[in-house]
Structures are given as C-alpha cells and as structure tokens.
Length: 144
Image (cartoon, rainbow, N blue to C red; front, top):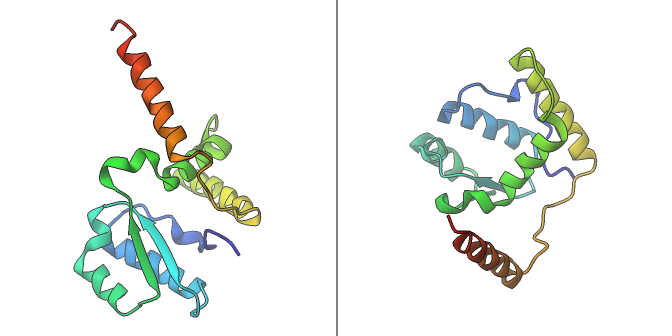
C-alpha cells in the first residue's frame, strides 16, 4: 500500500488556510478505505488547529494527528522526505510555471508510491548524541 495517497490533479493548493486543509482531508477521506486508521504527521501551523478542523476530526475518530515539536523540525522524518523530493526531482531543474513544478512533484509521487518504503532511523540515540558532541567540540575548538 502507498505511503502517500494518490491525490487528484488539483491537490496542489496555492493557499494554506483551513479551507484548503479541510479539502485535503476530504480527499484523503475519500481515497482511504473506511476500515483503515489514518495517521497524519503535521507541523504546528495554526491551519491544522482551527475550530473547523477540530469539528471535522471529532466526527472521524479514525484520524490520529501527530504534531512535530516546534523546536525539532530539522530532525523529523517528514523534512527528510521533502529533502529526498528536492534531491531526486527538483534540484538542478528549471520550471517555467507553477503548473510545470506541480507536474514534476506529481511525477515524483507516482514513482515514490510504486516503490514506497517507510523512513526509519538507522542510528541509535547514543550514536546521534555522540555525533552532536563531536560537532560541538569541533566548532568550539575552531578558534572562531
């Protein structure tokens, strides 16, 4: 099963208000079989927390929202996914219109969905903290 639902061509929305987020949720709701739970990883943008969205979610208990910590967005898996999109599809490309950019992103989604694999941490907490400690020592001892 795909990790990212196939969204209709009009899924790239130019505005990011709760109205557009609600339409996005409706699209997911229509695309995912009703017997499956839906987990969404979101940033802390206010659009995701309006009364309209709260009411919509209250009627759909299969939705589980997971918010990324505001101060830790640089380390979350979602950011890594967007980095992969940039590296594999967008970097070193020129798009003459927003529509061309949207089509390139849709092409990437189609390919990624055919070979979908979940992101997972490959290092232990101790390995990550040791790397941070080495970095801190290196910049502290740099003489700047």
